[in-house]
Image (cartoon, rainbow, N blue to C red; front, side):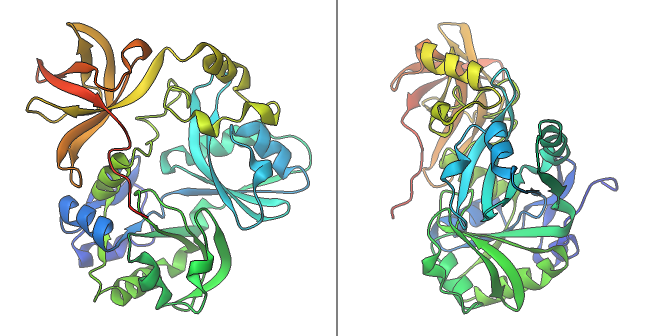
Length: 365
């Protein structure tokens, strides 16, 4: 895996038992102890993830907001300084370039936090579709990101900072926060379905902060967590993964993310196609299902009704919290009804499943 990119934390992985894989061109830990242990720790205590592979693109200048409004489907004009927002970013046909977070750092200064495999593509896309007085910079190589997620994330992180963390509300952030002697941007966001923080810092400071957080959370049972648990956690909470639930051929309307498509905000790339889908109803819909028969569904497994293909699985696995074999599937809209039975083709055999309400897991606040 010599040609793969590595985060500043790579030298520490082995010390914590990390087993690495190729993830979109990055050598990242899939697990440290076990996926099930790490998943359970995040649901009941807290887990620490290295997400330094994610990308940060800075957009600043008098026309920063006007450009972002054209690129994304959500309405960034609603953002206050210190607030973050989730949004798809679409092609003219409604398919997804990426899904991302927009951070408003100052009146005319924003960050786009984008998926690791899409950094270069996104950077070229926004530059290609930029106009007016705007400066766009790819900060990704210089910024590291850690995610501390779980019900004990706040008390553990509070040990390392004088900043009053309860004042940071959901999808809000604070800048220049001193955490264990490291200047950070601390954001109350995450990708697990739990409360927690995403913490941004200069890449050289990441190893120090990683060790400080794990040491601070030792008594509470905070663990290092890898990509495996990150995937099962986000999946139970029905948070989409780019390349599976969203892609150039899957629109946010089909993926059930219509609430993040603001047709009334003015023109944006993909608006016409998405407006048509909203008006006519999409031909395909993303649904959640639980297996009735024995078998674990996996990505790209065919989904059938009465022997006819109606779609395919986007994500499927055993849900560690819900204790069931479950999946998400993109299927013909006519069949997207709670209680609809379907067959998932596992090892060339149809195995019975049923469409259920999602998300599979929702934390008790």
